Length: 423
Image 1: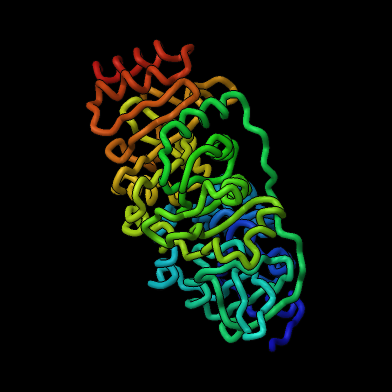
Image 2: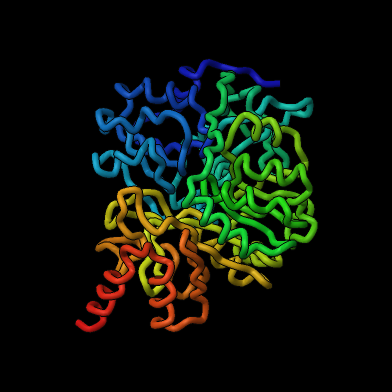
């Protein structure tokens, strides 16, 4: 059905000055990445672009800056150093719009490195745990190289491609990167309690990976008929699905299915989604389409932030002027939930950093990016409570946010804000 070659042979199609897209998250094809990087002495000025990826990113080594430049659409830990070192850049883009960069040839791709399941008897492979912009990359790249892996789950939905769409095949059965659930801290549990209290029966959820989303999920066991329409999910939803808490019966889009564009979790998650029709994987321009998100009644979007100012501006992608992560899908879902009938848009964060610095601030740090504007924000949640800012004046917002800041910082941030508007 297909002829495989070595990874070293396959990546020969990558030339100097090529633009290469790597499939995201846990689907980053490590064998192809390693083989590409091994050619660094003969390659110059190759742009490697991707969202957050799990696993190694050896091409991001600053010592290889003449060979590779990293263009991140969402900055992961494995490439964050490139921005300071000078061998990396960040392109701000809504996750919903990322496929358009390839479809419109704004980024003219030469090579797509993808990671797929073993073809079925009809010759169809699955993109498995990550679809995001990969379909658009496949359609628009001059060369498509696939790492074929029996460990890649065969997921249902739109991430199904025929072997005829792939130019080169490399067999390499790597284990997928895993994230195991970590027990939430006391503070994260308190935040989880507050957020869970905002979720009604028959709501549809969007949430990411991490201790706060997991803390929320553990408190939903007595809820009924929840749905899942999200850009990603992890292990925390499995038990709720098995208990029929999450069944999708009252969703407006993909009713009776859990909708996502990528997955990161443990082997249990990957085994659960394998050949499971309840899980529907779609491209990010579908999952993150505001017009689709808002069709879900009682859509609840739960997102995080680095800091929030007293007027409700949410910084979620940078620490001051230093880029840390990315825009991602936060605004897609904040807006979609806001427009949903009975929807709720929630930003949840601890009141302070681990070193005790307040994350509720009088004003954002110089250079900080505003991902969610003060006009879009609804609920801000910390361990000290819930501030509902929707339809509130600036004065009302300041008071509400001071009240959910850490008690040690309330007086000073209130004074700092008063001094700002005075002067």
